[in-house]
Image (cartoon, rainbow, N blue to C red; front, top):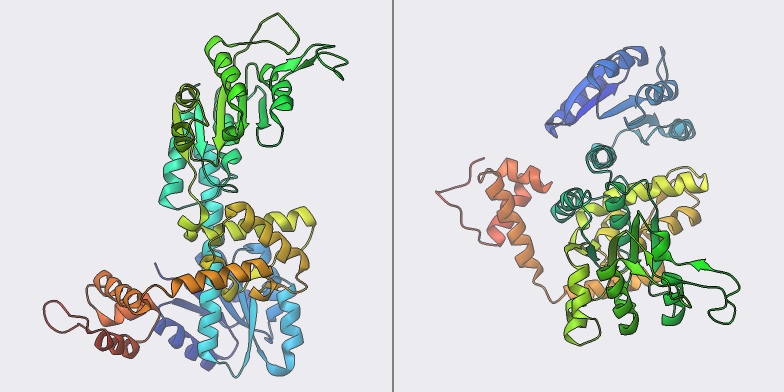
Length: 455
């Protein structure tokens, strides 16, 4: 379905010229000669974008923009203005407009601005729909992703959450393993009982043991009173052991006994305490390798790995980066009480091109940093931290090992196949004109099935 654009201008000839240009670009276009008529059309047709003149008699562009925001704040508004009225256009943007363009209009630039605006609106819509779906169907509103691997993971979470089987979550640092654990808990029958988190990598073995099992008064120097351990506190609920791969072999043996007997002994006590909890663990290590190299007990591994969930790294689901970035901008804006900002196309391209070794957490921190230090309304690539720029340079250097011509040729063939070898449709898919497409077909000597290409 083509995006719908509403043109608002009190001059008929301008509306007709713009309508012809935008319809040729594949948009569904309607028009209105004043702001009041435009508002009536918006209520009935819900356009994807409004392109309005700034100065009109019945209702000017600034007032129209404000009214559109009141009607449907998701509709982007682009203001057309004479060069001498740029300050007024900026005022319109402060009132909720998306962007402005000066007259005489550069139509190529206008099409770029429109394409960018409707794309951003689509991302926001997808993000909102995805969050709603995850929250309603799976209770996973804090996990964002539309990649097939993520959807598969969501379905698995929904399936295993109601049972009490142990779950082992595997994934690199920063992929969101704790969010997955919390989502399982929130969808479980234990969601009204405690969710107890222990980071096994943050404490040495001795302290970790006392943290898990608790202790009696006088059990060791400094034990001035009885303290319940995290396992005991999780009774009736869920115990989440993060970075379980860091646990010592000695403590692994004690944890295994707890899982077998469903009892614990506080340090310094001879009494056993019955415990009933669900165990969820997570690790960024290759646990199978740890088992084979005798650094992790195989019997404990099989106890933990009843259900296995692998969280994909961000570099394998780069299509989710725009959704994640949009979500992080919103959360940072709310947390710091600062206006939301837009991401420039060049920055978005850079964000998608990076490998993100720190995964979602690294992307979130990067977005927050740029939001805080930026003085403008748009985040651009010059705000990226130096270390990310260095990583990008390294990534580009590695990319030189690949044949870019082969990549471009494969993209061309894929577009032609999708369009049934129709030049016009293929060019539209690739966002290039037919002549450029034809030149590339000749350049790469692409063979055409069943004779010449259709128009």
